[in-house]
Length: 127
Image (cartoon, rainbow, N blue to C red; front, side, top):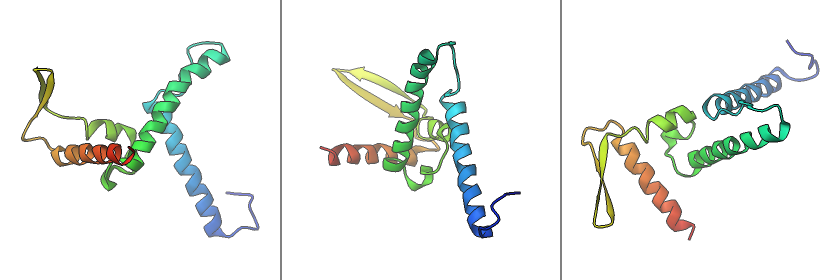
């Protein structure tokens, strides 16, 4: 139901589709980044509580656009936390160097290396 009588059905559909997409983004910010948590009765305290959550949300959105492959470009934050960073391996330190030993049977191995190389390319191009 709508009170937009003078609009075309396709325009109304697009308007509500965009609204639904925005509600999904709000739901993600609230569930993943705990954006709706208010610990204090003070507006200022709650505002500064939400500030890091907003920054983290914006960083993840920027990473989706700039670094991750097309496979993860529209993924939710929960998927982004799981797929590229769900690795089996160990870290060794020797002679002031860190060595990352990954499992050879990692399901997301290709995705991990694609993400790592794209991040390095982005760092090199921004210098």
